[in-house]
Length: 439
Ligand SMILES: Cc1ncc(COP(=O)(O)O)c(C=O)c1O
Ligand SMILES: [Zn+2]
Image (cartoon, rainbow, N blue to C red; front, side, top):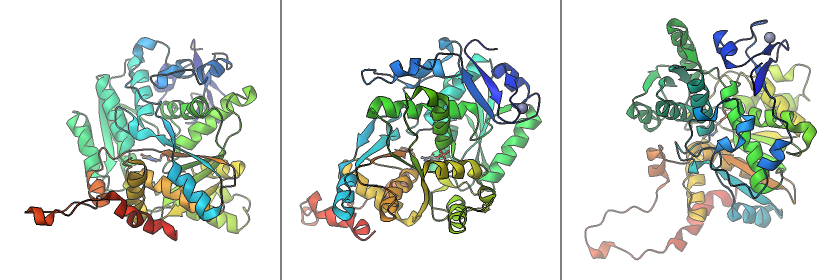
């Protein structure tokens, strides 16, 4: 066994010593070939209670070193990720009060603050780079719709590791050019995300390179589970409702892992009701959920989901057309009494304008989808009076230049002073709220 942690195969219960064995066996269980492993730590669980005390001032994810799968702190590759502030957004609370008579506390996780790439994918990037460094690995392959691609490319660059990144052709160009600028490799694949994953897997196999094995990869799950720790540290207690724009489902499954790990300690409290949001142009999970719900969740309901090939969407970052983890995600939603909602992608720009107007925060398109989900959840009575709501927005706009251009609405070309009418931003209040008045 490793000193600090080991893995347990979720299919057959076989114990795997650590990454050397896991990587050496092509990231599969040596006994049954299973790909889903659970990371088990040898640190006493009670230690977490100390780490999440409100007086703690962590400077990164690595505050939770005892519960991350790296043995030697010298191998840590970090850039201040994983401790993004969680802020109350009064305009969302006022809206709930004025429109629905609900008294809510609404927190937004400001992952746009993450220093490396401005998304919540930095956590996975940091852990992956650290683990690969610890095991002397010099090359890695990732398929991603964009944000994971950037985070992994950047952290691996920092660790001197070559990253070959496969992105589908409709990924935001502004997103993937940053990878090339870092001197990491980008393959823009003529096809959708599912095809990018397939090609990445073939490339990794051909050259014998390690590849990120997707949403259940411990390198992603273990990093992202710390969001649950941060909720306790920053908010003092677990929120009642968790809202997130969902694509592959890493973040929610990582949270679920945290709750499973610490269940008997009571440190994290009760898992929130999970409300997952998809854009209406690529929402296979929402379609599947609505169908199952309408039919009263018949036997095997969770295995019945559509696959959308080559989705055409305004938010390519979220476009997982073949949601292979839907069965696990949907069971989580059902178990927590949650919901799935679809929102209009055309409204992402409206949402970004409203947030920027009200709290001076520029959000990216995928974050707009998550925030629109809050309005949708309210409309569908999925939030109750007195509850605390946590909205995990995953990104800012650092690389979404054309989206910001769409969001921007005050620019005017002028030639002389006559053209320059005096500006008063209060005049725009009705304009930014209009799409939401009758939401
Ligand atoms: C900004 C943003 N939000 C949400 C998601 C969805 O993440 P997941 O479904 O893996 O938790 C992603 C994933 O690419 C993202 O980049
Ligand atoms: Zn096994």
